[in-house]
Length: 313
Image (cartoon, rainbow, N blue to C red):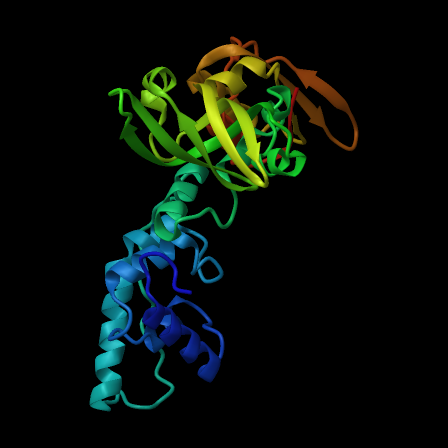
């Protein structure tokens, strides 16, 4: 089955080449063996966004920005193969020139996942809700798979990222919608009637993480979910977190941590820094204002070199 926006012929040509001549050693090797009659720039972009080339280069944004260079090298190699020419200095062992990619940082984790979803229609490497950690437990969120497993008509608290929305008009002229959400256990649909739909309008953009209070009604194994309220998950999660405890084994991360917290939104979360070495253990108070513990802040902290452990408290 072809992935969204890539196509069966393109995927098959790559798989056949790999099967015939072995795994691709690096990006240059891939470009030198790519059939540009079967794979075009648009398809390459979506394969990059989906993570197809992570084993060759995990920086997806760098590859995405360097598509022109990759396809240019691939086209040149294809033309040379078809014209049966040998390079200027001759010899089959002549190495190809390394593809030059822009020196650029990868997409932030949440944006990386959005690109992945847009490329293939589902989350593959992770799910955006993974970033909310213990906040989902504090909010009494249950995965949709658990609702199905219980099979009991009841009120449930769900979390999900918006996938799509289909609006309709009732015979009485009222707006309602079928909204598809995704959590780590799969996709599910929730019906929203006029009042709830209007209140949640700004949150129902694809990729937005929300907290849903919904009623489940079962007819056999089929469930119908009706939303009672929808709220932004970032805001709700920030209200539940008491803060962070960060363990480091050197004072080098302190300046970067101070900068990350200075840029963070204000909230109710406190931060505790634990310095743990082979000789001693001590706590440091950064004396910053209470902050809002969001997935973006967690990602920023995790990316700082020298961080040993991050715990939500």
